[in-house]
Image (cartoon, rainbow, N blue to C red; front, side, top):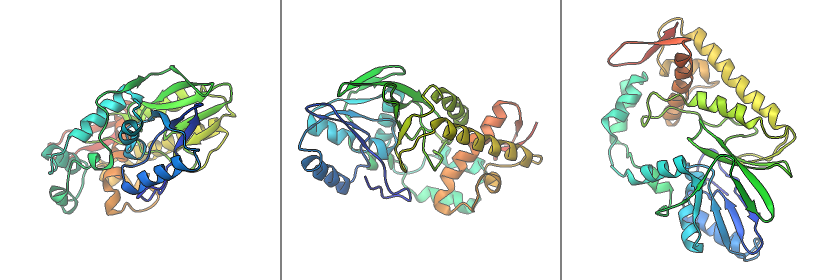
Length: 312
Protein backbone atom coordinates (compact mmCIF):
# COMPACT_ATOMS: atom_id res chain seq x y z
CA UNK A 1 0.00 0.00 0.00
CA UNK A 2 1.51 3.39 -0.96
CA UNK A 3 2.40 5.98 1.67
CA UNK A 4 2.85 9.75 1.17
CA UNK A 5 6.19 9.74 3.01
CA UNK A 6 9.86 9.19 2.18
CA UNK A 7 9.21 5.60 3.26
CA UNK A 8 6.74 5.21 0.43
CA UNK A 9 4.95 1.95 1.19
CA UNK A 10 3.62 -0.31 3.91
CA UNK A 11 3.11 -4.05 3.65
CA UNK A 12 -0.36 -5.04 4.79
CA UNK A 13 -1.06 -8.71 5.42
CA UNK A 14 -4.34 -10.43 4.59
CA UNK A 15 -4.92 -13.90 6.01
CA UNK A 16 -7.51 -16.18 4.43
CA UNK A 17 -10.03 -16.99 7.17
CA UNK A 18 -12.40 -19.08 5.08
CA UNK A 19 -15.43 -16.94 4.32
CA UNK A 20 -13.60 -13.68 5.06
CA UNK A 21 -10.22 -11.98 5.31
CA UNK A 22 -8.31 -11.17 8.48
CA UNK A 23 -6.47 -7.89 7.88
CA UNK A 24 -3.23 -7.06 9.69
CA UNK A 25 -2.63 -3.28 9.49
CA UNK A 26 -4.49 -0.88 7.24
CA UNK A 27 -2.58 2.14 5.83
CA UNK A 28 -2.98 5.88 6.40
CA UNK A 29 -6.45 7.45 6.33
CA UNK A 30 -6.41 8.94 2.84
CA UNK A 31 -9.09 8.81 0.14
CA UNK A 32 -6.62 7.34 -2.36
CA UNK A 33 -5.83 4.47 0.00
CA UNK A 34 -9.53 3.76 0.52
CA UNK A 35 -9.76 3.42 -3.25
CA UNK A 36 -6.88 0.92 -3.19
CA UNK A 37 -8.76 -1.10 -0.58
CA UNK A 38 -12.00 -1.03 -2.57
CA UNK A 39 -10.23 -2.20 -5.72
CA UNK A 40 -8.41 -4.99 -3.90
CA UNK A 41 -11.49 -6.28 -2.10
CA UNK A 42 -13.60 -6.19 -5.25
CA UNK A 43 -10.95 -7.82 -7.45
CA UNK A 44 -7.92 -9.84 -6.42
CA UNK A 45 -9.36 -10.66 -3.00
CA UNK A 46 -12.29 -12.47 -4.64
CA UNK A 47 -15.03 -10.33 -3.21
CA UNK A 48 -14.84 -11.81 0.30
CA UNK A 49 -15.51 -9.37 3.15
CA UNK A 50 -13.14 -8.35 5.90
CA UNK A 51 -13.89 -10.41 8.99
CA UNK A 52 -11.16 -9.24 11.36
CA UNK A 53 -9.09 -6.06 11.67
CA UNK A 54 -5.86 -6.56 13.62
CA UNK A 55 -3.47 -3.64 14.15
CA UNK A 56 0.13 -4.15 15.26
CA UNK A 57 0.53 -0.67 16.78
CA UNK A 58 -0.85 2.85 16.87
CA UNK A 59 1.18 4.62 14.16
CA UNK A 60 -1.03 6.07 11.40
CA UNK A 61 0.41 3.97 8.57
CA UNK A 62 -0.76 0.90 10.48
CA UNK A 63 -3.89 2.17 12.25
CA UNK A 64 -5.10 4.88 9.87
CA UNK A 65 -7.92 3.06 8.07
CA UNK A 66 -8.77 0.57 10.82
CA UNK A 67 -11.83 2.50 11.98
CA UNK A 68 -13.08 2.80 8.40
CA UNK A 69 -12.71 -0.94 7.75
CA UNK A 70 -14.28 -1.84 11.10
CA UNK A 71 -17.35 0.28 10.39
CA UNK A 72 -17.60 -0.80 6.75
CA UNK A 73 -17.69 -4.48 7.68
CA UNK A 74 -19.15 -4.32 11.18
CA UNK A 75 -16.18 -5.98 12.88
CA UNK A 76 -14.26 -5.06 16.05
CA UNK A 77 -10.80 -3.56 16.19
CA UNK A 78 -8.22 -5.95 17.67
CA UNK A 79 -5.28 -4.16 19.25
CA UNK A 80 -3.11 -4.08 22.39
CA UNK A 81 -4.47 -1.96 25.22
CA UNK A 82 -1.57 0.51 25.46
CA UNK A 83 -1.68 1.08 21.70
CA UNK A 84 -5.44 1.63 21.55
CA UNK A 85 -5.55 3.99 24.53
CA UNK A 86 -2.61 6.03 23.26
CA UNK A 87 -4.25 6.31 19.85
CA UNK A 88 -7.52 7.46 21.45
CA UNK A 89 -5.59 10.08 23.45
CA UNK A 90 -3.74 11.41 20.41
CA UNK A 91 -6.78 11.53 18.14
CA UNK A 92 -8.72 13.49 20.76
CA UNK A 93 -5.95 16.09 21.22
CA UNK A 94 -7.02 18.58 18.56
CA UNK A 95 -5.65 21.82 20.04
CA UNK A 96 -4.27 23.88 17.15
CA UNK A 97 -1.19 25.37 18.81
CA UNK A 98 1.84 23.66 20.27
CA UNK A 99 1.73 23.53 24.10
CA UNK A 100 4.54 25.41 25.79
CA UNK A 101 5.89 22.28 27.49
CA UNK A 102 6.36 20.60 24.10
CA UNK A 103 8.22 23.63 22.75
CA UNK A 104 10.37 23.65 25.89
CA UNK A 105 11.16 19.95 25.35
CA UNK A 106 12.96 20.73 22.08
CA UNK A 107 14.56 23.89 23.46
CA UNK A 108 16.00 21.84 26.33
CA UNK A 109 17.39 19.40 23.77
CA UNK A 110 19.60 22.19 22.44
CA UNK A 111 17.66 23.39 19.42
CA UNK A 112 18.72 26.84 18.18
CA UNK A 113 16.09 29.56 18.63
CA UNK A 114 15.74 29.71 14.84
CA UNK A 115 14.35 26.16 14.91
CA UNK A 116 12.34 26.49 18.12
CA UNK A 117 10.32 29.59 17.25
CA UNK A 118 8.67 28.19 14.07
CA UNK A 119 7.03 25.51 16.25
CA UNK A 120 4.72 28.22 17.55
CA UNK A 121 3.25 28.61 14.05
CA UNK A 122 2.76 24.88 13.44
CA UNK A 123 -0.33 22.78 14.10
CA UNK A 124 -0.12 20.44 17.09
CA UNK A 125 -3.01 17.96 16.78
CA UNK A 126 -2.00 16.34 13.48
CA UNK A 127 -2.34 12.69 14.50
CA UNK A 128 -6.11 12.62 14.02
CA UNK A 129 -5.79 13.87 10.45
CA UNK A 130 -4.05 10.63 9.46
CA UNK A 131 -6.32 8.28 11.42
CA UNK A 132 -9.98 7.58 10.65
CA UNK A 133 -12.30 7.88 13.66
CA UNK A 134 -11.66 4.90 15.91
CA UNK A 135 -14.32 2.55 17.24
CA UNK A 136 -15.49 3.42 20.75
CA UNK A 137 -14.34 0.00 21.95
CA UNK A 138 -11.86 -2.66 20.94
CA UNK A 139 -10.82 -6.29 21.54
CA UNK A 140 -7.63 -6.49 23.55
CA UNK A 141 -4.56 -8.36 22.29
CA UNK A 142 -2.15 -9.76 24.92
CA UNK A 143 1.28 -11.36 25.15
CA UNK A 144 1.06 -15.11 24.52
CA UNK A 145 -2.53 -15.02 23.25
CA UNK A 146 -3.38 -17.45 20.44
CA UNK A 147 -5.30 -16.17 17.41
CA UNK A 148 -6.75 -18.90 15.18
CA UNK A 149 -7.11 -17.67 11.61
CA UNK A 150 -7.89 -19.99 8.71
CA UNK A 151 -6.95 -23.04 10.75
CA UNK A 152 -3.48 -21.66 11.55
CA UNK A 153 -2.56 -20.64 15.09
CA UNK A 154 -0.73 -17.37 15.63
CA UNK A 155 0.84 -16.64 19.02
CA UNK A 156 1.18 -12.98 19.97
CA UNK A 157 4.63 -11.69 20.89
CA UNK A 158 4.60 -8.15 22.24
CA UNK A 159 7.46 -5.72 21.75
CA UNK A 160 8.17 -2.19 22.94
CA UNK A 161 10.42 0.77 22.23
CA UNK A 162 9.15 1.74 18.80
CA UNK A 163 5.68 1.85 20.32
CA UNK A 164 4.45 0.88 23.79
CA UNK A 165 2.88 -2.57 23.15
CA UNK A 166 3.57 -3.66 19.58
CA UNK A 167 1.88 -6.93 18.55
CA UNK A 168 3.72 -9.48 16.38
CA UNK A 169 1.92 -12.63 15.15
CA UNK A 170 3.99 -15.81 15.20
CA UNK A 171 3.02 -19.13 13.61
CA UNK A 172 5.27 -21.68 15.30
CA UNK A 173 4.13 -24.54 13.08
CA UNK A 174 4.95 -22.70 9.85
CA UNK A 175 7.74 -20.53 11.28
CA UNK A 176 6.23 -17.26 10.04
CA UNK A 177 6.34 -13.94 11.90
CA UNK A 178 4.14 -10.98 10.96
CA UNK A 179 6.50 -8.45 12.48
CA UNK A 180 5.03 -5.00 11.86
CA UNK A 181 7.78 -2.49 12.62
CA UNK A 182 9.35 -4.58 15.37
CA UNK A 183 11.75 -6.35 12.99
CA UNK A 184 12.65 -4.82 9.62
CA UNK A 185 15.23 -6.12 7.12
CA UNK A 186 17.10 -3.02 5.96
CA UNK A 187 16.10 -0.05 8.07
CA UNK A 188 16.00 0.48 11.82
CA UNK A 189 12.67 1.36 13.41
CA UNK A 190 12.52 4.78 15.02
CA UNK A 191 13.05 4.58 18.79
CA UNK A 192 12.39 8.00 20.27
CA UNK A 193 11.65 10.05 23.35
CA UNK A 194 8.66 12.38 22.89
CA UNK A 195 7.33 15.43 24.75
CA UNK A 196 4.49 13.25 26.07
CA UNK A 197 6.98 11.25 28.20
CA UNK A 198 10.14 13.35 28.31
CA UNK A 199 12.14 11.12 30.68
CA UNK A 200 11.34 7.80 29.01
CA UNK A 201 13.86 5.04 28.25
CA UNK A 202 12.45 3.57 25.02
CA UNK A 203 15.81 2.21 23.90
CA UNK A 204 15.94 0.06 27.01
CA UNK A 205 12.52 -1.30 26.06
CA UNK A 206 13.67 -1.83 22.46
CA UNK A 207 16.79 -3.76 23.39
CA UNK A 208 14.77 -5.90 25.82
CA UNK A 209 12.31 -6.59 23.00
CA UNK A 210 15.14 -7.68 20.70
CA UNK A 211 16.04 -10.30 23.31
CA UNK A 212 12.37 -11.24 23.71
CA UNK A 213 12.03 -11.89 19.96
CA UNK A 214 14.86 -14.40 20.03
CA UNK A 215 12.25 -16.98 21.07
CA UNK A 216 11.27 -17.36 17.41
CA UNK A 217 12.98 -19.99 15.28
CA UNK A 218 16.20 -18.78 13.66
CA UNK A 219 14.88 -19.78 10.21
CA UNK A 220 11.56 -17.96 10.62
CA UNK A 221 10.16 -16.21 7.55
CA UNK A 222 9.67 -12.61 8.68
CA UNK A 223 6.89 -10.59 7.05
CA UNK A 224 7.77 -6.96 7.88
CA UNK A 225 5.71 -3.80 7.49
CA UNK A 226 8.34 -2.22 5.25
CA UNK A 227 10.79 -3.61 2.68
CA UNK A 228 10.76 -7.25 1.63
CA UNK A 229 10.17 -10.51 3.56
CA UNK A 230 13.35 -12.14 4.86
CA UNK A 231 14.79 -15.03 6.83
CA UNK A 232 17.74 -15.35 9.26
CA UNK A 233 15.79 -13.43 11.89
CA UNK A 234 18.35 -13.98 14.65
CA UNK A 235 21.11 -12.54 12.47
CA UNK A 236 19.03 -9.41 11.92
CA UNK A 237 18.28 -9.13 15.65
CA UNK A 238 22.01 -9.35 16.34
CA UNK A 239 22.67 -6.60 13.78
CA UNK A 240 20.07 -4.29 15.32
CA UNK A 241 21.41 -4.73 18.85
CA UNK A 242 25.02 -4.30 17.74
CA UNK A 243 24.22 -1.11 15.83
CA UNK A 244 22.61 0.49 18.87
CA UNK A 245 25.45 -0.54 21.17
CA UNK A 246 27.96 0.88 18.68
CA UNK A 247 26.10 4.20 18.77
CA UNK A 248 25.89 4.10 22.56
CA UNK A 249 29.64 3.56 22.90
CA UNK A 250 30.38 6.38 20.44
CA UNK A 251 27.98 8.72 22.23
CA UNK A 252 29.53 7.97 25.62
CA UNK A 253 32.96 8.81 24.22
CA UNK A 254 31.59 12.00 22.65
CA UNK A 255 30.27 13.18 26.01
CA UNK A 256 33.67 13.78 27.62
CA UNK A 257 32.40 17.37 27.51
CA UNK A 258 28.79 18.40 28.24
CA UNK A 259 26.63 17.68 25.18
CA UNK A 260 23.01 18.31 24.24
CA UNK A 261 20.87 15.96 22.18
CA UNK A 262 21.17 18.37 19.25
CA UNK A 263 24.97 18.37 19.48
CA UNK A 264 25.04 14.57 19.41
CA UNK A 265 23.55 14.35 15.90
CA UNK A 266 27.01 14.33 14.34
CA UNK A 267 27.92 11.21 16.33
CA UNK A 268 24.68 9.27 15.83
CA UNK A 269 23.78 9.93 12.21
CA UNK A 270 25.73 9.27 9.03
CA UNK A 271 24.50 12.38 7.22
CA UNK A 272 23.41 15.89 8.25
CA UNK A 273 19.93 16.09 9.77
CA UNK A 274 17.54 18.02 7.54
CA UNK A 275 14.99 20.53 8.93
CA UNK A 276 12.08 18.13 8.45
CA UNK A 277 13.94 15.44 10.40
CA UNK A 278 14.77 17.48 13.50
CA UNK A 279 12.04 16.11 15.75
CA UNK A 280 12.72 12.47 14.91
CA UNK A 281 16.49 12.93 15.22
CA UNK A 282 16.07 14.62 18.59
CA UNK A 283 13.86 11.81 19.85
CA UNK A 284 16.39 9.19 18.78
CA UNK A 285 19.30 11.12 20.29
CA UNK A 286 17.48 11.45 23.61
CA UNK A 287 16.65 7.74 23.57
CA UNK A 288 20.37 6.93 23.42
CA UNK A 289 21.32 9.59 25.98
CA UNK A 290 18.64 8.41 28.41
CA UNK A 291 19.76 4.78 28.06
CA UNK A 292 23.29 5.77 29.03
CA UNK A 293 22.04 7.98 31.86
CA UNK A 294 19.84 5.22 33.32
CA UNK A 295 22.85 2.90 33.41
CA UNK A 296 25.10 5.53 35.04
CA UNK A 297 27.37 5.88 32.01
CA UNK A 298 26.31 9.53 31.61
CA UNK A 299 24.96 12.08 34.04
CA UNK A 300 22.68 15.03 33.36
CA UNK A 301 24.02 18.40 34.44
CA UNK A 302 21.66 20.67 36.40
CA UNK A 303 20.51 23.50 34.15
CA UNK A 304 17.16 25.26 34.05
CA UNK A 305 17.22 25.87 30.29
CA UNK A 306 19.12 23.06 28.56
CA UNK A 307 19.77 19.38 29.22
CA UNK A 308 23.45 18.55 28.85
CA UNK A 309 24.98 15.15 29.46
CA UNK A 310 28.55 14.29 30.43
CA UNK A 311 30.39 11.02 30.90
CA UNK A 312 30.14 9.71 34.46
